[in-house]
Image 1: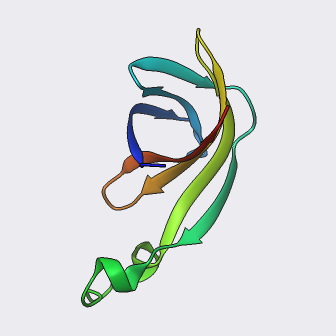
Image 2: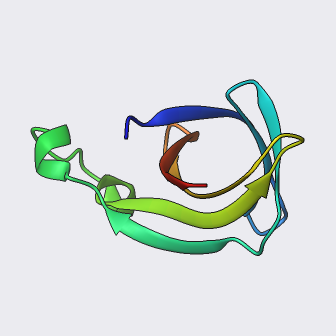
Amino acid sequence: MQLETLVGVVLDVDGAPVSFIWNSRQYTVASRPVRWYSRKLWWQEAAAAPRGAGAALVEIEMWRLWAVSDYDRVFLEMKHLDPEDSWEIHRIDS
């Protein structure tokens, strides 16, 4: 699956996603999101680590959740890219 960028991601006070826009549809998170951290393929992404890069160099924040729109319900994994503060859909199951 090709990664797709999400827009309009709204977070709760703990930093968990509560809603987002994907494919021009508004989705609301319908389950308690589960967060974990995955590893980046840092050796493919950077020739050298900048001094002080820390965890953002090798860790990716991931979320697994159910989301609903007016048209469908999906189970997906979201990827939060830091320091860009961008979001992508990593995996989708309908």
